[in-house]
Image 1 (cartoon, rainbow, N blue to C red):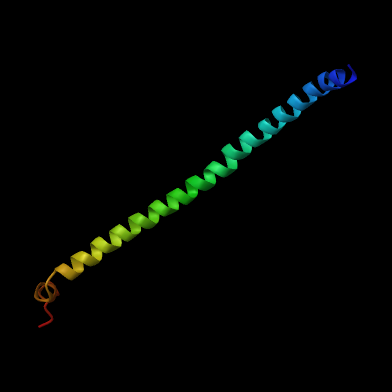
Image 2 (image 1 turned 90 degrees about the horizontal axis):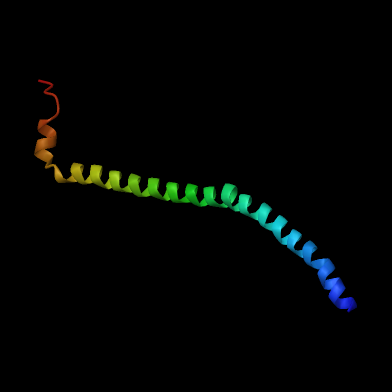
Length: 77
């Protein structure tokens, strides 16, 4: 009987500890962990966009024939 009373005595304390732990962990995850992953995802997206833009610009420069590039220069004569 003594162990049953001890278990009933400790049960609210155990639930209180679990509840407090959850109350501290949920805001920590929401406000610190998720923004970190969002920042990493955003930086990855910016790198992909930068690489795509750079490849498009360089592809346009390479595809233009050299004669057309020279003819687009101002005439210094």
